[in-house]
Image (cartoon, rainbow, N blue to C red; front, side, top):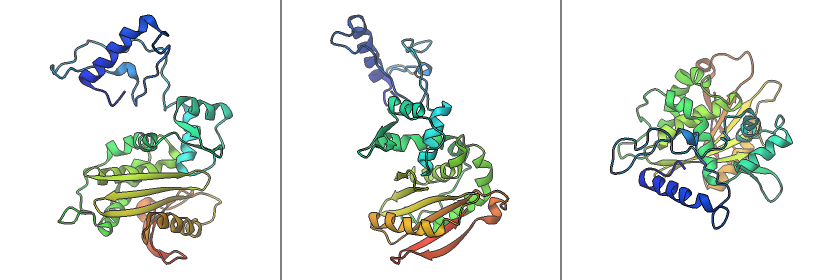
Length: 289
């Protein structure tokens, strides 16, 4: 429903009104209207009029709202985005997300995000709070000709993370993937001028993979989390990003390790970079954040 505005939305409402009296003959018995806001909060504008053409919402046909913000959704979506195992969600929780259409079962029976649109929309919505809270960031990562300078992008991210990472983590509703969402909020600001971010969720593998494309530049990024009572994920991360970069046809990339262990120094103190190589000789910038 978010894609429909103005006269197009009005046309849809007229069709619903015209078909309703005769349902289910030649018309659906039930319709689910899908959007990122509660459908009853919509207001309609006409292309020929600047003002709202109805005093309230036209969607008084709503019977029930199913929202991404229910806790049972978080219990499943959060570990999926982080690349972890679904340990909290019940069978009913998982089936609920399948029934909502957010997830589907692949050929092997595992859960995956239902479609490419949701793979893009879900993390964008979850990263909305930190993205709205971002300070003004000058695009220092652009060369004079407007192309992406990956070295400058690294410097800009490190400066941003050291200065703003700590407070922004508190603005994210999904605590386990808060660093991922803050990083994505920063990258959204980068690509909004004409790039894209492709995401892969490696459920059960403890990682999230991102591919940033801007003009002719392509950057592969792997995100991992270092938690209490776990070994340093560097070795495993280098093995995984080696495979990921090979699939992208790249010889370099970033491995970002978010240190979420208790008792660590503040972000501005512990954030640093180091150079590493994979077994196949790919050059990796390791960011410990």
